[in-house]
Image 1 (tube, rainbow, N blue to C red):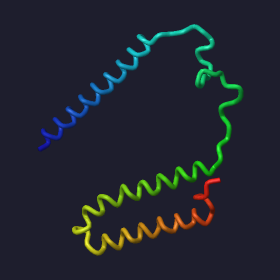
Image 2: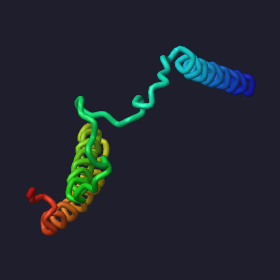
Image 3: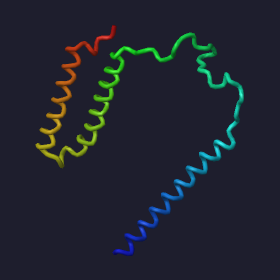
Image 4: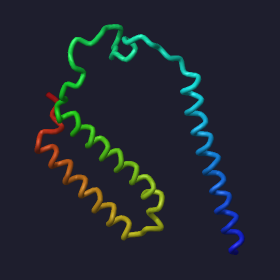
Length: 122
């Protein structure tokens, strides 16, 4: 039993070492083979064939971030509901109650965002 665990540790260490060595080798190889340019214009920002006229770091409206967070929230809800639906018979009534609580919490957040006007696109 102890011999097997030692073998597994050695195998894991060997795989980690080989993976790390391959990663380091490929990074060094890409730097070695990559074309280099001494032109100072190489590092300038460039977009659609036109040099930018102003600073690219303009502030965005927070509304975009709120919509993105809501999208992620409801996307995760769907991700959690699929395995729950597959295991519902094993989970029984307790699993149903837990999912209803989960959906209720998300519904409270949705209503709050709706009341705050996050879902209104201007």
